[in-house]
Length: 390
Ligand SMILES: Cc1ncc(COP(=O)(O)O)c(C=O)c1O
View 1 (cartoon, rainbow, N blue to C red):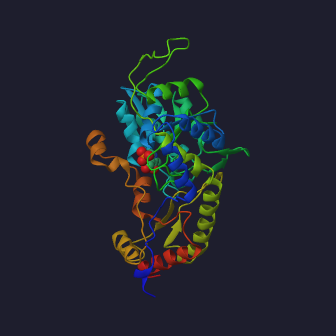
View 2 (cartoon, helix red, strand yellow):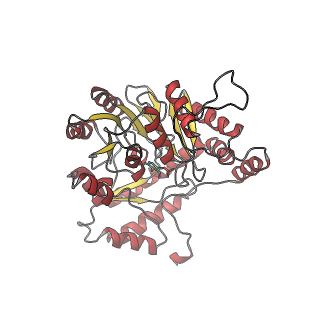
View 3 (cartoon, protein in one colour):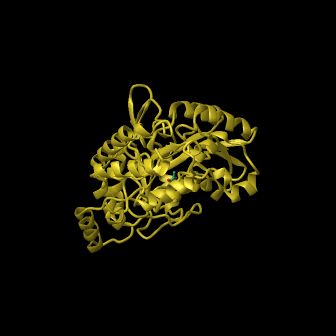
């Protein structure tokens, strides 16, 4: 069969259906293109879905993290602890407010920050003031939030969950299921609706929290720091502190509401595809293994990441990526450890984070999105087996 005739399978892709398009078209014909009633409607639907007290819709996931730092009052002379295996934004948000980053190592089998790697990072922070710890629910698997929360609290810090990969994931730490974003263990949880994520609005993000004061602060900082005091003249607004324009338009929130209504279906399909992958990939062990899920985590995987022993297979990641591409299969690396980025190396020097380096040496993300057919999983696994000579 000519592989060239088959559609290319990217590592991630949005699922936009006719009713999503209709929802956007209706919003375009309505009165507000920017901040109108659809923003609040999206926030209400989202907070109900994840079980949080408050949700604040924001322009993108990076702005969402920046707002969390601002609302918490993190600033110069403060330290934030960030796992090195994450997207740049998790660390950058600390730098936006002048705080320093201490990178935590990760478990090389799951890619997650653990209580041990956090404890070690806290030691390296020394007597500096640690204000926030930002666990990343990498791929969709949930970090050990109760233990991380307790360790952070012992150091006087709070958790800000960077959760764009984990919308729809659930964790049962104490037998009670916690949807990611319910705010049971953290001050804020942050989501992104970038197209490869589980829910897409193009650009977009959401902060959730159970703290009314933090929610109000994030809300005013989202729009220049403006507040409208109760009882003031109808035109009156005040700016007690400096904020930003991090608003998300009504049009994108209309798409968000339409997508959110399908979240159960998207999650079910992601789980079914993940189970198929687990079944098919078993034949490629031990050279290829799925990243491991902690016992408490019931993930709605955003990324299907495998760990490959390229050396044992007598090849390189580059050769495998190129061979997959030649067979119409996209792949990606999540992530280059952030502590290895030139900006952070120049600032903090060389760091030894063996878990992050071991993860990076082996990780490769394969296609996973609701629009994939069951047969696409066979195609990906066959292409991978061929690329590895298995
Ligand atoms: C872990 C993580 N944090 C933060 C972000 C930033 O989100 P956005 O691209 O919406 O700014 C992303 C998305 O790429 C992400 O994957």
